[in-house]
Each structure stands twice: as C-alpha cells, then as structure tokens.
Amino acid sequence: MTRLKEGGISDVMPSRVVIISDLCEARDGPSVIALKNAGMLADHGVSVVYFCGDSGDNPGLREKGVEIHAIGNSELRRLSFANAAITGLFNATAARRLRALIRENDTPGTLYHVHNWSKILSPSIFAVLRPVMARVVLSAHDFFLACPNGGYFNFQKGVPCTLAPLSLACLGSNCDRRSRLEKAWRIVRDIERRAFMDLSRSKGTVLAVHEGMVGLLEHGGVAARSIKVLRNVVEPWSAERVAAEDNSEFLFVGRLDHDKGVLLLADAAKQADVPVTFVGDGELAKEIAARYPRARLLGFKDRLGLREVASRARCVVVPTRSRETFSLVAYEAISSGIPVIISDFAATRDDILQEGVGFRCNPYDTAGLSATLKTLAADDVTIAAMSHRGFLGRDHMILSASNWQQRLFDLYRSQMLQADVANRSLVH
Image 1 (spheres, rainbow, N blue to C red):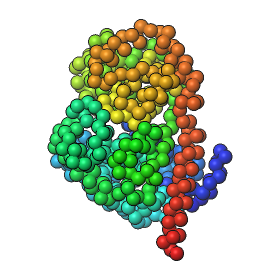
Image 2 (tube, rainbow, N blue to C red):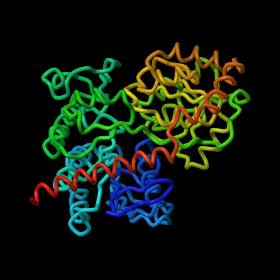
Image 3 (tube, helix red, strand yellow):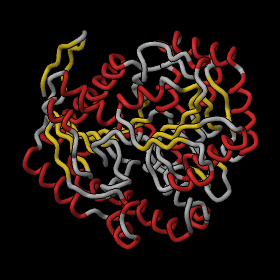
C-alpha cells in the first residue's frame, strides 16, 4: 500500500487498483463511472489495471498509463441465443484471464473494484475473486447483486416488484422483460452468483449509488454492514448554461431498448408533434424511425459529440420503464441547465422534483407524456426558470469529481485496513 497526498488527501491507499467492467467504452452509466474511476486513480499516481469484457479499445486510458486487459468478447445481446445462454452463465474466458491476472500480479496492496459484469463477464468472475474478497469493492449500478432480473421490477405488469428474490413467489413470477424462459435462465444465473459470492457473509463492500437502493439490496440478501452509499460523480455536459428556453429539441441519451422507454417517447413525441433526438444505439433504432420518421437518431456519441447535441436541447427525457437507480444522464443535463422529464420509477425522482428542475412521467402512459411534451414545448418561462435553477444550484445537487474521489479514497482506505486486520488475525 502507498500513501497518497493530493488535494488534501493523505491516507493509506492500495498500491494497485484493478477496475473490472464489461465495457471499455462509455456506452452506458456503469461504464462511464468505471472509466472515470480508472482515469481519476491514474491521475493521482495509483497503478491501475482495467479488466474488461470487450475489445479494450480506449486510447485515452492507455495515454494515462492504465494497463488494459481485454478478453475481446461481445455483449450477450449480440450473440446467438445458445451462445448467450451459455456464456452468460459462465464466461470461461473471463474466468481464466482474470485468474491469471490475479495469480501473476496480486499483492496485499491490490484492491479490486467491480463495476459491471452482467453484459459480458458473467458470474464466473466472482468464483475467481472469492480468495481476495476482503479486498473487493462492488458498485451496484443496478440490482443484479440482489434480484434475478436486475430491476426489482415486474416488466410484464409494468410495476415495481416487492417479492423476496428467489422466494417461491419470485420463482413463480413471470416478471422478465422477454419471457418465462429467460426468467428461468436469470434464476439459474443468480443462484450461481450467490454460490460463488455470498453477500450475506462477504467481507467485500457493496456501493449503492443512491440511498433508495439500500433497503432493496438488503431485501435481496446483501448484509447491511457491507453496504455503503456513494452517489455517482456527475460531469456536466456544458461549463456554460445551456439556454434551454431558446431550443426546441427534446433529447434522449442511452440504450435504445424496451426498458428505457424509447418507443413510448417516440410515440408521445409524434402525438405532440415535437422534435425529438435519440443519442445511443440499440435494437429498437429501426422501430423508432418507423414509428416517428421525424425523430433524429444519431447513434453513439462521445463526450465532445454529446456536448454539441446537448447545446440544442430544450429538455432531456428519461422515461425508464423499470427502477432507475440513479439516472446519471438526468443529472448531467440538470447541471448543464437542461430541465428533465424523469420516470416515476427513478430513485432520484423526488430529489429532482423537490429541486424544481424537472417533471415526472408515468413511463407507461403515452398520452400523459405527450401532454407534458406539448406543454413544455410552448412554455419558455418555465423552461428558463428550471434551466437557471439547475445550473446555479448544481454545486449542491451533484457530487463533484473532487468530492467523489475523496469519498472513494476513504472507502478504499477503509476496505484495505479491514483486509489488513483480517489478514493479521489469520496470521496470529
């Protein structure tokens, strides 16, 4: 372990941090945070290894001196059904490569931080991490550490789920977004993950990204003593206030999948006859275009491209049709001066409404969202007021990079000290 002194920080820190994440590109919230995590550590002189499931194509990380270990696999959604079913249960390549990395490079000063694993890496990584679990931190960007379908949500009924994960009622519930067969597969995967890593007794730490997650994580078998809350770091899209009241475009940023509510937004925008732009990729791109030919689909955008698109936004719409644990996009928009329409199922909905920087929507009510879009398209006064309120109040609404890294360093220090104490007790 090393002693880090930077920006008022002076604590015992791990000498190396291995970041583990499905993706090495900023294509969703978890990957954005994982990459910020790696870059921040490298900027502060910590040795960083980035272990990922995709191709590892990220020159920016390499320029910072981050060592990238990529297994070169595709996301499960891009594989055939049979390959996805097998690899999603146990990615043998990921397990073998991670085991070799640990065997060849692990030291008492190495900490492992898992950000995401459900899209490529699979539960196999937890079997490999078990011997070093006292030095593992797991960020819960979703509910896959507690709930088989990852959302604590009944996608067939369109309502939040309160069943105990893996209870008889849960096993019999047809709640998966696609089919009963996929629900059965997810149950098998969750049982496997729990066998590899029992979070009711684990010495690792689970980081919830919002206070509203804590009770649900406990309900799913994660020990209360293992859970700590660290909200996501937010980097505004713009350093200057976006004059949203002068713009006309409604904007969506994220995966173009059913659970993100993109078809609802396309239909609502068509009914309201307002311009809407979709940034992101996914299986529903063609259907969005067919439903609303006026919609602009720009595909994936890097940070610079997103900044340019956001400069033309009047309002960002986050119509997620399941539980949203944080909604990084919403806060990136608000802190740039762009109001949001936030799903009723977002953990941060009440925070946003209380701050007066957004409106709510039922992500299963097309007519209701359409009415909101039409009203906001004509109300420059309200948009301007929310824009100023979000931009001027961003310092207290979002966790800055400096505050986030301070809290993360504190958590790392605590985890390493806990592991050191456990190791000493075994020796003696």
